[in-house]
Structure formats: C-alpha cells, structure tokens
Image 1 (cartoon, rainbow, N blue to C red):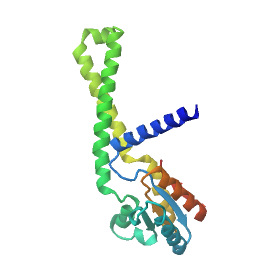
Image 2: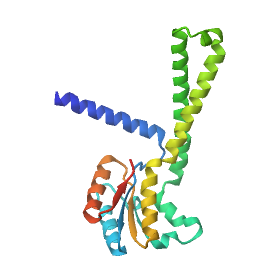
Image 3: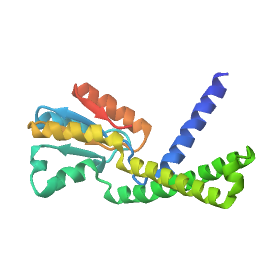
Image 4: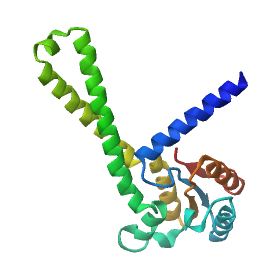
Length: 199
C-alpha cells in the first residue's frame, strides 16, 4: 500500500515539474530570502548557502542599502530577479501554453453544449465554436499573464526592499529544485528569525 502511495506521489511531483518546465523559462522558480541586522551576519549566511550541495555563487545574492542607489535601483532588481532572459521565456511560454489550453477548454465547452443540444449552439454552430475558442484563449492568456507576473515573488521582494530601506541586509537565494529549497530554508532559519519564500 505504501509503495503505491509513494509511486503516486512521485508521479504527481513529476507531472508538476514537467508542467512548471513547460510554463516557466527560469531555472530557479523559487526565491528564498532572509533578513539580517548587520552585513557580517548576512555575509556569513550567504557563504554558508554557497556550500549547500549543488548551489553555485550565482544562486546566492547579498543585498544591502547600497543596492538601492543608482538609476531605478538597477543593482537591486538584478539581484532579486537575476534571470532576465528567463523572464522573457516565461512570458512567451506561459501565454502560449495557457492560451492553447484555454482554446482546448473552449472546444470542450462547445462539445458539451452541442452534446446537450443547447438551442443557441445548435442554431449557429460555427459562430458558437469560434466564440468559445476565442474567449477560452483570451481567458487562458490572462492566466498566463498572471503566472508571468509571479505574484508569489511579490512577498519576498517587498520584504527585502523594506528591510534594506531600514538599513538592514538580506540574503536572497534562488534554489533550482525542492531539495535545495529545503536545505536553504533550514540553513537560513538557523540564522535569521525573518525568512520568507515564494512558492
């Protein structure tokens, strides 16, 4: 029984990962940040994270008050969202995948109405099909736009920005898999009372 549950859990994880891969163009889909009172504490935590198995230096960013200087806080933005090219890939992939999914859902809705012999659909089948595909695609692309905005990253970004405006320091990590995320979370929780993460 437990083997079947484990296989089922593994299958679900694989399906979620393949869905994420088809939607998102970034390598790291999770963002983890911890806030520190001093630069020394933050630097120590950042160094420890770089020793997490599989992590490399580019996945760990030290963020401080000096990052808010300059035009439109460019250094801070690059540290919070280092995969700029990946964001563009996410934008394109998410809209294509969710738009096509919406179109298929529109077709399925049309077939359901047609099967139930809905008078409006039966009287004008081509127009009904076109309308349902069109609105299904639009609705799907709206969801794609929402996914591209990554609302789950907002909480992390706001916490970091607030902290550094108050003269504090933050370590922002971009783990690339669930194991790294767990290790990063554990390490940061030992070092800071204020740790936030995206989904």
